[in-house]
Image (cartoon, rainbow, N blue to C red; front, top):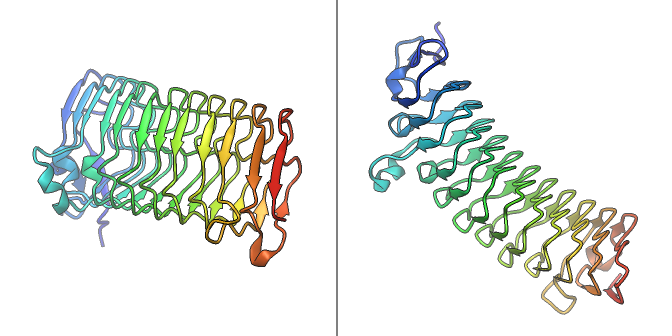
Length: 324
Protein backbone atom coordinates (compact mmCIF):
# COMPACT_ATOMS: atom_id res chain seq x y z
CA UNK A 1 0.00 0.00 0.00
CA UNK A 2 1.37 3.40 -0.91
CA UNK A 3 2.17 5.95 1.74
CA UNK A 4 -0.26 8.74 2.48
CA UNK A 5 2.55 11.01 3.64
CA UNK A 6 3.45 14.08 1.54
CA UNK A 7 6.85 13.37 0.08
CA UNK A 8 7.97 16.11 -2.27
CA UNK A 9 7.73 19.71 -3.29
CA UNK A 10 9.03 21.29 -6.47
CA UNK A 11 7.96 24.92 -6.19
CA UNK A 12 11.36 26.45 -6.83
CA UNK A 13 13.37 24.10 -9.01
CA UNK A 14 15.65 22.24 -6.63
CA UNK A 15 16.56 24.76 -3.98
CA UNK A 16 14.97 27.96 -5.14
CA UNK A 17 18.10 29.86 -6.08
CA UNK A 18 17.07 33.30 -7.29
CA UNK A 19 13.46 32.86 -6.14
CA UNK A 20 12.45 35.90 -4.07
CA UNK A 21 8.64 35.61 -3.86
CA UNK A 22 6.42 32.55 -3.53
CA UNK A 23 2.70 31.92 -3.17
CA UNK A 24 2.09 28.32 -2.09
CA UNK A 25 -1.09 26.23 -2.24
CA UNK A 26 -1.84 22.61 -1.33
CA UNK A 27 -1.30 21.66 -4.99
CA UNK A 28 2.41 22.34 -4.55
CA UNK A 29 2.71 19.36 -2.20
CA UNK A 30 2.70 16.00 -3.93
CA UNK A 31 1.24 12.98 -2.12
CA UNK A 32 2.11 9.47 -3.33
CA UNK A 33 -1.48 8.21 -3.19
CA UNK A 34 -2.78 11.04 -5.39
CA UNK A 35 -4.85 12.50 -2.56
CA UNK A 36 -4.50 16.12 -1.61
CA UNK A 37 -1.97 16.50 1.18
CA UNK A 38 -3.06 17.55 4.67
CA UNK A 39 0.40 17.72 6.27
CA UNK A 40 3.07 20.26 5.37
CA UNK A 41 6.15 18.01 4.97
CA UNK A 42 9.44 18.26 6.81
CA UNK A 43 11.93 20.90 5.57
CA UNK A 44 9.26 22.47 3.37
CA UNK A 45 10.76 25.61 1.80
CA UNK A 46 13.85 25.39 4.02
CA UNK A 47 17.16 26.72 2.79
CA UNK A 48 15.79 29.18 0.23
CA UNK A 49 18.63 31.67 0.51
CA UNK A 50 17.13 34.31 -1.79
CA UNK A 51 13.51 34.09 -0.66
CA UNK A 52 12.19 37.43 0.62
CA UNK A 53 8.41 37.07 0.71
CA UNK A 54 6.15 34.03 0.95
CA UNK A 55 2.37 33.68 1.04
CA UNK A 56 1.24 30.55 2.91
CA UNK A 57 -2.35 31.63 3.55
CA UNK A 58 -3.87 29.40 0.88
CA UNK A 59 -1.69 26.47 1.89
CA UNK A 60 -2.32 26.43 5.64
CA UNK A 61 -6.08 26.63 5.36
CA UNK A 62 -6.02 23.05 3.93
CA UNK A 63 -3.50 21.55 6.38
CA UNK A 64 -3.98 19.74 9.69
CA UNK A 65 -0.33 19.91 10.79
CA UNK A 66 3.04 21.36 9.90
CA UNK A 67 5.97 18.94 10.06
CA UNK A 68 9.42 20.00 11.20
CA UNK A 69 11.35 23.04 9.98
CA UNK A 70 8.93 24.98 7.82
CA UNK A 71 10.93 27.87 6.28
CA UNK A 72 13.85 26.91 8.51
CA UNK A 73 16.94 28.99 7.86
CA UNK A 74 15.80 31.32 5.09
CA UNK A 75 17.96 34.28 6.07
CA UNK A 76 16.41 36.92 3.81
CA UNK A 77 12.70 36.35 4.42
CA UNK A 78 11.18 39.62 5.62
CA UNK A 79 7.47 38.91 5.12
CA UNK A 80 5.31 35.82 5.73
CA UNK A 81 1.57 35.88 5.04
CA UNK A 82 -0.12 33.20 7.14
CA UNK A 83 -3.58 34.72 6.89
CA UNK A 84 -6.58 34.48 4.62
CA UNK A 85 -8.26 37.70 3.49
CA UNK A 86 -10.97 37.30 6.12
CA UNK A 87 -10.22 36.62 9.77
CA UNK A 88 -13.75 35.20 10.11
CA UNK A 89 -12.64 32.14 8.15
CA UNK A 90 -10.05 31.02 10.72
CA UNK A 91 -12.58 28.98 12.69
CA UNK A 92 -12.98 26.64 9.72
CA UNK A 93 -9.25 25.85 9.52
CA UNK A 94 -8.04 22.38 10.52
CA UNK A 95 -4.44 23.23 11.47
CA UNK A 96 -3.86 21.86 14.99
CA UNK A 97 -0.16 21.01 15.27
CA UNK A 98 3.09 22.86 14.49
CA UNK A 99 6.30 20.79 14.42
CA UNK A 100 9.85 21.62 15.52
CA UNK A 101 11.84 24.47 14.02
CA UNK A 102 8.89 26.20 12.37
CA UNK A 103 9.97 29.67 11.20
CA UNK A 104 13.31 29.35 13.04
CA UNK A 105 16.46 31.22 12.08
CA UNK A 106 14.71 33.77 9.86
CA UNK A 107 17.19 36.53 10.54
CA UNK A 108 15.44 39.22 8.48
CA UNK A 109 11.84 38.64 9.61
CA UNK A 110 10.52 41.69 11.49
CA UNK A 111 6.80 40.98 12.05
CA UNK A 112 4.70 37.88 12.70
CA UNK A 113 0.91 37.53 12.96
CA UNK A 114 -0.27 34.15 14.28
CA UNK A 115 -3.97 34.74 13.85
CA UNK A 116 -4.14 31.75 11.51
CA UNK A 117 -3.09 29.45 14.36
CA UNK A 118 -6.41 29.80 16.18
CA UNK A 119 -6.99 26.01 16.37
CA UNK A 120 -3.39 24.95 16.97
CA UNK A 121 -3.05 23.02 20.24
CA UNK A 122 0.64 21.99 20.11
CA UNK A 123 3.73 23.98 19.14
CA UNK A 124 7.07 22.17 18.78
CA UNK A 125 10.65 23.15 19.62
CA UNK A 126 12.29 26.37 18.45
CA UNK A 127 9.22 28.08 17.08
CA UNK A 128 10.43 31.37 15.56
CA UNK A 129 13.69 30.82 17.42
CA UNK A 130 16.58 33.18 16.73
CA UNK A 131 14.56 35.46 14.47
CA UNK A 132 17.01 38.14 15.44
CA UNK A 133 15.20 41.03 13.70
CA UNK A 134 11.70 40.17 14.98
CA UNK A 135 10.23 43.22 16.76
CA UNK A 136 6.47 42.56 16.56
CA UNK A 137 4.57 39.32 17.20
CA UNK A 138 0.78 39.19 17.42
CA UNK A 139 -0.01 36.13 19.56
CA UNK A 140 -3.73 36.87 19.90
CA UNK A 141 -4.62 33.94 17.65
CA UNK A 142 -3.08 31.33 19.98
CA UNK A 143 -6.34 30.74 21.82
CA UNK A 144 -6.28 26.92 21.65
CA UNK A 145 -2.61 26.19 22.39
CA UNK A 146 -2.15 23.74 25.29
CA UNK A 147 1.56 22.88 25.11
CA UNK A 148 4.63 24.80 23.95
CA UNK A 149 7.99 23.03 23.55
CA UNK A 150 11.55 24.36 23.98
CA UNK A 151 12.87 27.76 22.91
CA UNK A 152 9.60 29.43 21.90
CA UNK A 153 10.44 32.87 20.47
CA UNK A 154 13.92 32.71 22.00
CA UNK A 155 16.60 35.22 21.01
CA UNK A 156 14.34 37.70 19.23
CA UNK A 157 14.21 41.53 19.41
CA UNK A 158 10.66 41.69 20.77
CA UNK A 159 10.29 44.66 23.15
CA UNK A 160 6.94 43.57 24.60
CA UNK A 161 4.86 40.41 24.60
CA UNK A 162 1.22 39.79 25.49
CA UNK A 163 -0.06 36.30 26.30
CA UNK A 164 -3.53 37.42 27.37
CA UNK A 165 -5.26 35.29 24.72
CA UNK A 166 -3.48 32.03 25.66
CA UNK A 167 -5.98 30.96 28.29
CA UNK A 168 -5.83 27.25 27.39
CA UNK A 169 -2.07 26.88 27.74
CA UNK A 170 -1.21 24.16 30.28
CA UNK A 171 2.56 23.69 30.03
CA UNK A 172 5.65 25.53 28.83
CA UNK A 173 8.86 23.62 28.17
CA UNK A 174 12.45 24.84 28.58
CA UNK A 175 14.01 28.15 27.51
CA UNK A 176 10.79 29.97 26.78
CA UNK A 177 11.77 33.38 25.33
CA UNK A 178 15.25 33.13 26.81
CA UNK A 179 17.89 35.71 25.93
CA UNK A 180 15.41 38.19 24.47
CA UNK A 181 17.71 41.09 25.25
CA UNK A 182 15.29 43.78 24.01
CA UNK A 183 12.26 42.55 25.97
CA UNK A 184 11.12 45.18 28.50
CA UNK A 185 7.53 44.17 29.37
CA UNK A 186 5.67 40.87 29.53
CA UNK A 187 1.98 40.32 30.29
CA UNK A 188 1.35 36.74 31.44
CA UNK A 189 -2.12 37.28 32.84
CA UNK A 190 -3.82 35.21 30.15
CA UNK A 191 -2.01 32.08 31.37
CA UNK A 192 -4.69 31.34 33.94
CA UNK A 193 -4.60 27.56 33.34
CA UNK A 194 -0.83 27.17 33.18
CA UNK A 195 0.38 24.40 35.53
CA UNK A 196 4.08 23.94 34.73
CA UNK A 197 7.05 25.94 33.46
CA UNK A 198 10.33 24.33 32.37
CA UNK A 199 13.91 25.51 32.79
CA UNK A 200 15.21 28.89 31.69
CA UNK A 201 11.90 30.75 31.50
CA UNK A 202 12.74 34.24 30.16
CA UNK A 203 16.25 33.87 31.55
CA UNK A 204 18.83 36.36 30.35
CA UNK A 205 16.25 39.01 29.39
CA UNK A 206 18.57 41.72 30.62
CA UNK A 207 16.27 44.67 29.87
CA UNK A 208 13.06 43.23 31.31
CA UNK A 209 11.67 45.79 33.77
CA UNK A 210 8.08 44.61 34.23
CA UNK A 211 6.33 41.24 34.23
CA UNK A 212 2.69 40.86 35.22
CA UNK A 213 1.63 37.35 36.29
CA UNK A 214 -0.93 38.06 39.00
CA UNK A 215 -3.58 35.91 37.27
CA UNK A 216 -1.31 32.87 36.94
CA UNK A 217 -3.03 30.98 39.76
CA UNK A 218 -2.79 27.28 38.82
CA UNK A 219 0.97 26.99 38.49
CA UNK A 220 2.35 24.02 40.46
CA UNK A 221 5.95 23.64 39.22
CA UNK A 222 8.71 25.98 38.05
CA UNK A 223 11.96 24.68 36.55
CA UNK A 224 15.51 25.95 37.00
CA UNK A 225 16.66 29.50 36.19
CA UNK A 226 13.24 31.12 36.23
CA UNK A 227 13.78 34.78 35.25
CA UNK A 228 17.49 34.36 36.02
CA UNK A 229 19.83 37.19 35.06
CA UNK A 230 17.01 39.65 34.40
CA UNK A 231 19.31 42.32 35.70
CA UNK A 232 16.98 45.33 35.33
CA UNK A 233 13.95 43.77 36.99
CA UNK A 234 13.18 45.82 40.10
CA UNK A 235 9.75 44.73 41.34
CA UNK A 236 7.79 41.54 40.80
CA UNK A 237 4.59 40.13 42.29
CA UNK A 238 3.82 36.41 42.51
CA UNK A 239 0.69 36.56 44.68
CA UNK A 240 -1.14 34.26 42.27
CA UNK A 241 1.26 31.37 42.91
CA UNK A 242 -0.98 29.84 45.57
CA UNK A 243 -0.78 26.27 44.17
CA UNK A 244 2.98 26.22 43.69
CA UNK A 245 4.70 23.14 45.12
CA UNK A 246 8.10 23.00 43.39
CA UNK A 247 10.65 25.71 42.60
CA UNK A 248 13.77 24.69 40.69
CA UNK A 249 17.27 25.97 41.29
CA UNK A 250 18.48 29.50 40.53
CA UNK A 251 15.05 31.10 40.87
CA UNK A 252 15.56 34.83 40.15
CA UNK A 253 19.31 34.28 40.20
CA UNK A 254 21.39 37.44 39.63
CA UNK A 255 18.45 39.82 39.40
CA UNK A 256 20.83 42.41 40.74
CA UNK A 257 18.41 45.38 40.79
CA UNK A 258 15.49 43.46 42.30
CA UNK A 259 14.31 45.42 45.33
CA UNK A 260 10.81 44.07 45.94
CA UNK A 261 9.36 40.61 45.43
CA UNK A 262 5.91 39.66 46.72
CA UNK A 263 4.90 36.04 47.27
CA UNK A 264 1.62 34.66 48.65
CA UNK A 265 1.56 35.47 52.34
CA UNK A 266 0.74 33.16 55.22
CA UNK A 267 -2.54 34.99 55.85
CA UNK A 268 -3.59 34.66 52.21
CA UNK A 269 -5.92 31.79 51.33
CA UNK A 270 -3.91 28.55 51.43
CA UNK A 271 -0.57 30.20 50.72
CA UNK A 272 1.80 27.94 48.75
CA UNK A 273 2.32 24.35 49.90
CA UNK A 274 5.93 24.25 48.82
CA UNK A 275 7.55 20.81 48.81
CA UNK A 276 10.88 21.70 47.24
CA UNK A 277 12.94 24.89 46.77
CA UNK A 278 16.04 24.40 44.64
CA UNK A 279 19.50 25.73 45.38
CA UNK A 280 20.61 29.31 44.75
CA UNK A 281 17.10 30.64 45.38
CA UNK A 282 17.31 34.39 44.70
CA UNK A 283 21.10 34.22 44.91
CA UNK A 284 22.95 37.41 43.97
CA UNK A 285 19.91 39.67 44.35
CA UNK A 286 22.10 42.49 45.56
CA UNK A 287 19.41 45.18 45.96
CA UNK A 288 17.02 43.08 48.04
CA UNK A 289 16.40 44.37 51.60
CA UNK A 290 13.43 42.26 52.76
CA UNK A 291 11.49 39.20 51.63
CA UNK A 292 8.40 37.53 53.07
CA UNK A 293 8.33 33.75 52.54
CA UNK A 294 5.73 33.10 55.21
CA UNK A 295 3.31 31.78 52.60
CA UNK A 296 5.74 28.95 51.79
CA UNK A 297 4.35 26.78 54.52
CA UNK A 298 5.26 23.29 53.33
CA UNK A 299 3.03 20.34 52.48
CA UNK A 300 0.64 19.51 55.32
CA UNK A 301 2.25 22.19 57.40
CA UNK A 302 5.69 20.57 57.21
CA UNK A 303 9.03 21.95 56.17
CA UNK A 304 9.96 22.05 52.47
CA UNK A 305 13.21 20.66 51.17
CA UNK A 306 15.46 23.66 50.61
CA UNK A 307 18.60 23.56 48.47
CA UNK A 308 21.88 25.33 49.29
CA UNK A 309 22.58 29.07 49.15
CA UNK A 310 19.09 30.36 49.85
CA UNK A 311 19.16 34.17 49.49
CA UNK A 312 22.94 34.23 49.33
CA UNK A 313 24.66 37.26 47.86
CA UNK A 314 22.18 39.86 49.13
CA UNK A 315 24.36 42.13 51.29
CA UNK A 316 21.53 44.57 52.05
CA UNK A 317 19.02 41.93 53.15
CA UNK A 318 17.75 42.86 56.61
CA UNK A 319 14.48 40.95 57.05
CA UNK A 320 13.41 37.46 56.02
CA UNK A 321 10.03 36.14 57.19
CA UNK A 322 9.58 32.36 57.21
CA UNK A 323 6.92 29.94 58.39
CA UNK A 324 9.06 26.79 58.32
